[in-house]
Image (cartoon, rainbow, N blue to C red):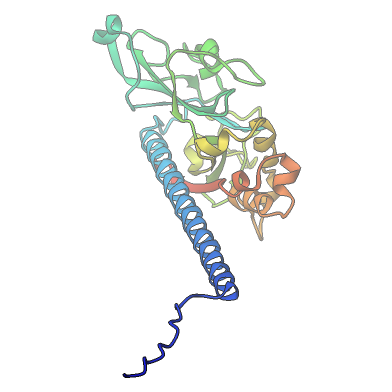
Length: 308
């Protein structure tokens, strides 16, 4: 009789508690790192998308403004008015041009070649454009505004006198007109300064007359201006919604003063505004989220005037 063989006990392969805990810790670390990577990628993509969107908006706005300025009516006689208003806060611009404008169908048969063009930031801090088409029987459509020898009205008048309800009255020039249309809901800040034929950068004063000859007094008239410098502040709609007081934000991008433009080291609006935005305490001082402050974009163009 054979002796039965003794079977060895079978051991099951398994992880120890320590190994399980280590594996869970590693998985947790990998999950956190992956989550952070995804979050950083999403923020980067969102930032790039916001930047590209702002750049597209700025190009569209500046393209429209450049086209209007290129078609501005100016004559060698220097008898055409324009309103370039350097106001506290956002500036405003009104002039006659050959760009298309709005007109009621009933008047369409009498439409002239000219329109009253304007740009401003409205009370909701959105950029508006005025395009008011003129009929031939309207003052201003005949173009001759003023007697350049003495600045008196020559059968016509200034833009402010001809369209007081549209452009408004001094000092705010906040008129109302159905021909104002929102051009961009993202542009909340706009400033203008001018460049004369000698390359001098300047702001117009409240008593500036577009038709007034220089006469050595250092005040160029419209025909002596060679370019307009336009700076805009852009903030996408998602971040605008996070800001309770856009007026405070707009005021934080201060108005330039003439000394900013003086040689030998002139500072244009973009330089002034970007210096303010880059300050470490900018968001806190204005009372806006840091991410909203980081989404503000400043753009600046030099748009040439047609040379007579």
